[in-house]
Length: 259
Image (tube, rainbow, N blue to C red; front, side):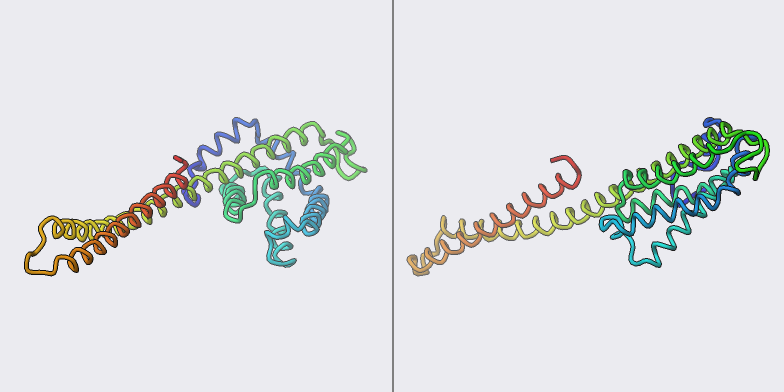
């Protein structure tokens, strides 16, 4: 399946799920716990996005309170998908989208990890209250906190890995596109400068030729002055084009990281 151009396909992803030790049995236990922990998840996300709203640097990524609420709901849906333990194509699309969106808006990975840690910590504390017998406060029987915590930790690390990989690939793609655009712009500027330089050099050569071979029929004093001015103008034009080429080359080297 082609997931928005991201290189990690679903088959590779499923191999990663297996490598992470997320067995069907562990995923089932996490799913059972996930349904009961939904209120705690909502509370954790509410606390996180309240903190974000109060932080000018982070709230600047959102247009208004409505958008903030919308994103919080999307995060809730993603976490519920994660906790279901299905790890299907729907989940993979959601995890990748988080990385690509963060890259597109310029949200640094450390901000993502800080928020993620807050939510994960709340869920781990909730899972640790399972007693493996009667369940938390008698609501559920025979579910081991160790199994749930283990599955949740592995699932979270998988989730983070997919999002950060998607972020990195989107960033690399954007950098390649930027270099391509600048390369095309530089090529056009270079072609224009070379054309202007060729014209200026032609004028300079013509003036130099006239100085070397003056026309006897013309007033030599007046003609020499005009030719001198022509040489000066042509020399200045050549220098302008050379300076422009130098500037464009420096920009190109800086943009491509070669400077």
